[in-house]
Image 1 (tube, rainbow, N blue to C red):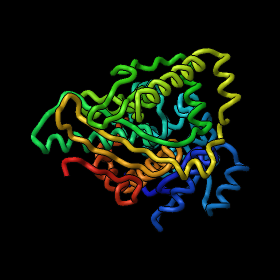
Image 2 (tube, rainbow, N blue to C red):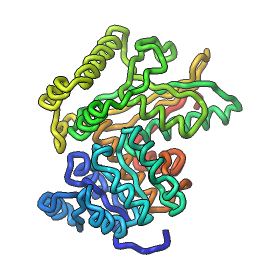
Image 3 (cartoon, rainbow, N blue to C red):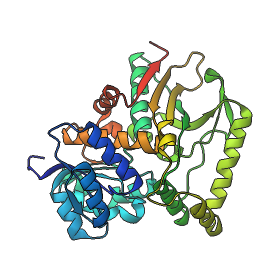
Image 4 (cartoon, rainbow, N blue to C red):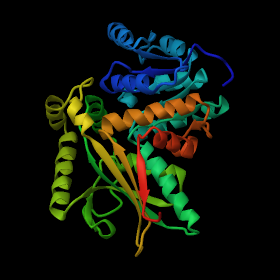
Length: 363
């Protein structure tokens, strides 16, 4: 982009729970010369947030084409925290494509990404716009980690048929994430079956693995980047805990499959705009180990991400993706993935900022 716009970057959906976290994170790490602002649909809340962080703001309702066009014409990059994206995201995407504004978001809604790609992908390529859905916890760690893992395999002069990603984590749930999950269930969007048995031992790690709720979106994103089979799981200390966790997710899936169950979850869970306490967020963490399959001495690459996965890690990934887009570091246009667009550049940004670190058994 050669056109000079009023702002380099705008955080949209800034007054929601995740949006506020994103605003706080960007205010903490923004380069001094970064021209950034916030946007959303509620003028009163925007005024309060803009005053707190000394920012300008734009009112932009997710269904107002004129307001969204004003937004996307005024900046080079939009970072959207306004989900569920299948409900609120399409007109913003269309406006970004039309007005040549780069875009990233936090969606884990695969069906919506595919729908947007089918509708706007050709125009995005023609306009040389970069759009990176799933730029949060799903799916930056999986996308960049898998790329780094396969790069190390290639440096060893080897090829592999498949590898796994195994997560250990602690964190809390925010209302936006719950709302997105409930929207998927209401729309009866099918979740792909797990590619491995529900519970199995991971000998190289001396632990047991079970189903991981984010596997469908992460596996899809990684599959777009490589032709090696990738599968994801939650890591547990023993078979008892693995089966307990699987039973819990089975119950959760059953509740989400019926209207009564969804009503119960809405009543018991956080509302949109709400999330876990500051203490829960601060004590969160993610450990993500990539491991090649069916090998006596497998390559093992482990990333550590301090902070709550669905809150701290996700906004840090989104913000650094946005800063990389502002710096014109993308190597891809159209609808793409974190690894395809930003790859090693984004990973190095995250490492330099101590958003993550890694160890490898080959070093």
